[in-house]
Length: 258
Ligand SMILES: Nc1ncnc2c1ncn2[C@@H]1O[C@H](COP(=O)(O)OP(=O)(O)OP(=O)(O)O)[C@@H](O)[C@H]1O
Ligand SMILES: [Mg+2]
Image: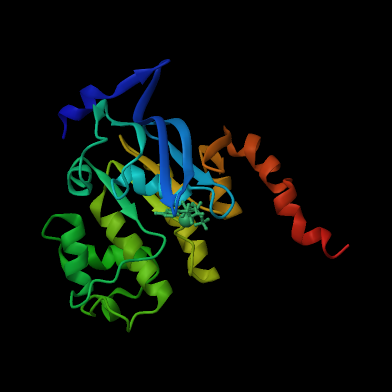
């Protein structure tokens, strides 16, 4: 793992963590072929906090699943730390340090929260450290640590447990797909603090967050605006945010009230 530091690619003087080269993703529906991701190329630098945003259905989750290895692109290459990982399985990508928190959290029946955290971290996590991760996501650790991950947990609790597992893994490239979804306002403030802490303490790792939330967009090093499976704009939050907030789509609900 340490060796991989020496393989980090340098493109135009930037140290690259992840490179997507001409990625396309097509699905067949009946006799029609639909392009979900269209010839998308993207460089994610090391130590960067990137937020991907864009309208519903623009391909954000699909892109995240392609990076994590859940979907295979129809064309293109994925390079992590200079290594072509396009044909690697989800497990092999996870071993190389890709962590993924789903938009819809996965329910593992019959596993206790403490064991899920231990499994995710890949080490013999002490009860105290497991509690720390749960507290970070605003769950009162003692109440939860021995509970089972099943339908008795609310949607917001499941989502927070999922975020805790990703924090426990300490991955090289972490992707959060809409971490704010289903989380109440109070916990959302804590979530922002977690992300700010992650951004400020970033060391030889990168974070990609898919989000629609202005507060998350504001703390990004870089925002990527996706629409129709293509990158429409990318830049700092100061550059991109005014355009996003001023788009026709964003204004539409207001104009109805004029
Ligand atoms: N396997 C598939 N088969 C058919 N259509 C698909 C498939 N995967 C994704 N799509 C379609 O591709 C589009 C992009 O989906 P995706 O989930 O990536 O959107 P998104 O940008 O994450 O949207 P949201 O903001 O609503 O989460 C959607 O219209 C979706 O229905
Ligand atoms: Mg999505």
